[in-house]
Image (cartoon, one colour):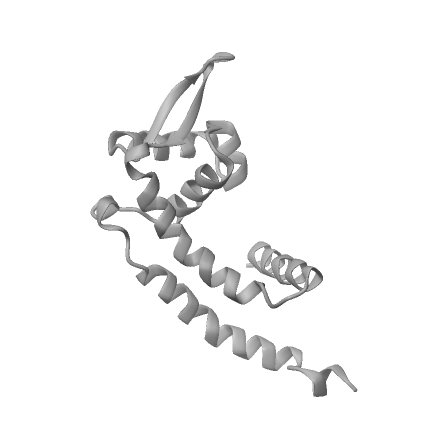
Length: 149
């Protein structure tokens, strides 16, 4: 059986994804921000920052910059803004006093967790039926697309 008969050919796949991606992004942008975080001018870059801190725990500015693929100065600006709003906490690293450790403020951790959990549930629903190899291929494909665009 040819690959074209068992699934979409490349052009059909591209057409489908070009139509799907704007809807997907639109829905993600319309996701309701928890009331506790509303009015804080949060953007998608903040969600990525929150996800790293939620899943990986407290991190240094340089660690966050590397993960977010931005400069440490950009992370410092984001952290400063979100610290003033009480969403993040910055504390001194006990092992290196020159280094700041960033963490989610306890007062907002639950709201951030529930905000990210909606998306995590949707990804779980989409990915659980796949094999580990299929999931790896999907993630690699999205990564290649993101790098190419």
